[in-house]
Length: 343
Ligand code: KG4
Ligand code: ZN
Image 1 (cartoon, rainbow, N blue to C red):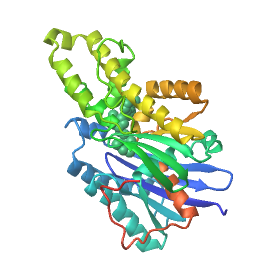
Image 2 (image 1 turned 180 degrees about the horizontal axis):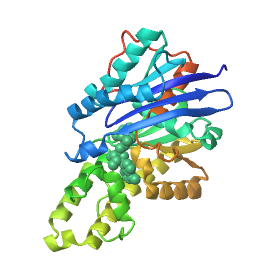
Image 3 (image 1 turned 180 degrees about the vertical axis):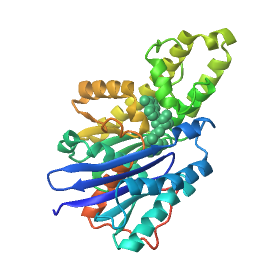
Image 4 (image 1 turned 90 degrees about the horizontal axis):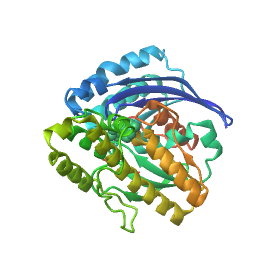
């Protein structure tokens, strides 16, 4: 394979991100990577406001391109851009930028599925690439998705389980919000959980005994709301009580994620399990998953590099590289946002 460079653009939610990857037979190097996070902006509203997100992407994306010295002529072989799923107006910012660049330079564009990008985030790690033998089972846990995916080959997937309501990240975000902990809930709640007792509150494990590999987290959210509203104002302000509740919530979510992943691994016999998406940044999830899979099945858990669990453009460029190598290019004239795209 001839070495090539690929530009990645990500703007599906609340991060504007740009990366340039160099891919050869022996290595994958991130030559440049910059992410402009909008988290401080959306924190004021307690969640992502789509119109604000889109306007902020517009304000950020050209400066990112400028700092990556991609003007006037981008020296890359392809442009990979997130096509969906995500917020329609936010996605369009990245897509229109890629289209304009393709139009002006003739460089081909590749529309990338954001979920495939998350899968590719684990492949970006050199040690993980050495273990990248199919089939691989992936637990994709983010703010919008919770899916168990069988990676059969590059660009070939089968979703074997998914959430029927809220995503795991939403379970973190919504329960943290109702406890008044702020946004995004995952990192804040898991930090408080470090000092709490995970057995203090008895919370439900939805779909725990169901034979499918599907998930459901809305019942947990309701149980947490009832528990929280049942506490006296004095207890709600008590830091140790709050830490205990955070630890109990995290334990309930991790329990379900690990049990379902183990059951799916028993059925599909993957060579490895990878956990990707924002929630895979959770250390407790990683620890329990690694211990369980190694003890029960002797298989390894592969995760993205630090900082690449949440949305970023390096993973979009990586998934774009899989397509570029297989000559799967998009027609930039027809490229449009696909807010509901699935794997
Ligand atoms: O992948 P991502 O950046 O965006 C989507 O594609 O949705 O994931 C964001 C989600 C949020 O719900 C956030 O609360 C969660 O990832 N998250 C975490 C942690 N860090 C981020 N959840 C649990 N523990 C964490 N350490
Ligand atoms: Zn994501």
